[in-house]
Amino acid sequence: QVQLVESGGGLVQAGGSLRLSCAASGRTFSNYNMGWFRQAPGKEREFVAAIRWSGGSSYYANSVKGRFTISRDNAKNTVYLQMNSLKPEDTAVYYCAAEVSRGWPSQNEDEYDYWGQGTQVTVSS
Image (tube, rainbow, N blue to C red; front, side, top):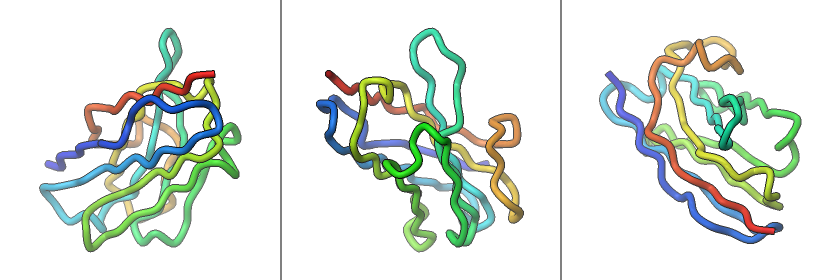
């Protein structure tokens, strides 16, 4: 089992920045690709970003490309999501997830095995 705990959400004005963290415990963190997903009210959960187990490759949804950066520190068992130039449409609950794979990270939430409880991000206009 892997336990994931997100933190760093909050209320920010449009154009501002937040950094989300996701701390993992339970098994060897470097065995997992890690992803961030989000779910806005009344919408389906969607892919935001993913990073390979080694940290060597990362992928982004088109809607966040150039504004968000995913990174990980395997020594600290933590994955981060740096969010800059935030827009009201980024408002959502953000979830981190772990994929038991050492291949290329998936953008499909069904491929992820463990999920955090989510952290709310609200961007005011």
